[in-house]
Image 1 (cartoon, rainbow, N blue to C red):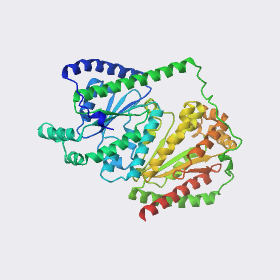
Image 2: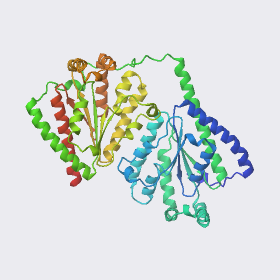
Image 3: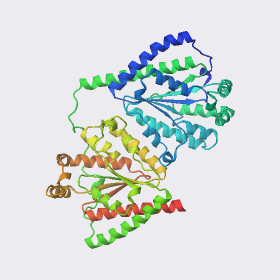
Image 4: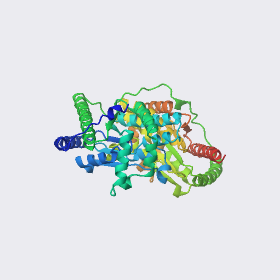
Length: 503
């Protein structure tokens, strides 16, 4: 696979200077086109053999292009904070906004590569790591991102010569570490694992480019030309798509067709379930005391939780959340309420703002509305195309699987009320001195589309109710019953997880 990068190609200084001037002008022109378009981010990853010029190539790109719109990230071993989150948290955190470019060194492939070479990952675990990377890249590419991946290559002989030259230079010797020589001794194992990475993850929309790294002039020009060609093609594709969209009449907001059903999974719920005030007060005190104990134990054990609350307008999400956090230590939980995305959030993949809010070990995050807006509000209001919300089911399942794989307790609550109960609560809010502000014109408009939202919720449960991250459907016509069911469910899952971790 790497023979094509051991041909001894080079470019002399005079030819380099001539080509560099033209290439730099082209890259800048394309960079500003992408910045003005603001339709997609550019992710450029550098991996490969130690000493093959990854760092100097990144530095050259920052010189050629406008660094104000470039994100350069060099990864090291995960920090304590990064280790306390799912593995891909830091990669989502470091995504550039649409229109800008991210340059990544020792990124998502590096640790998997090293762990495979030194036996910390067997073949099955290594393949699963690569599958996770593929899903990550597919989610970004499906959202419009341009991903370019460069494998910088040196033969074993040239790598040894490069390391020796750096070690002999007083100004650069700091760049050669013991780990570099250890990796050099395991060169063949690195090449074998590298071939596996490239063959498994080089796909049409996120390909690898193998670059010969001996001659810096050749290396820099080769990388720059590939970036320019791919960025130009991507810009042309997006601009053609914009032109095609303008030539057709856009649908009115909310006109997206949604298949309604005569019966949904929500219709099976017994909304007559209720508890008496006396029973409610007794159990509420009991459950909150127990949840407080479990919350302190979870914090001590480093067990984190993600609690998601979705449901119809006025279904009682806020009341259930307030009773949930009543006995928890405020230092260990955060409540996030999500509405329409901000300009910054819209400049990223829709999951980006949720990845950034995930809790570290021992903490609890509560989401009042969540990533499910993609397949609910955005679907029904036409803010997401049909292709976007349909592929979101798989993206969400992968996102939640990574949360669970980290050992986090993930619970998703859908609070369901009847259409008649919703009307009664709307009218009560309108007449309340301290709740009338919660009732908006949008609430009344959404109510008119009740059947469409119920159908979307049915599909949401159907496609994202997994064994690892199941939906808890809560009968919520009686607020007291709903609150107790939420509390009891959280208690049961925390007890199970804490028992498993202690056993």
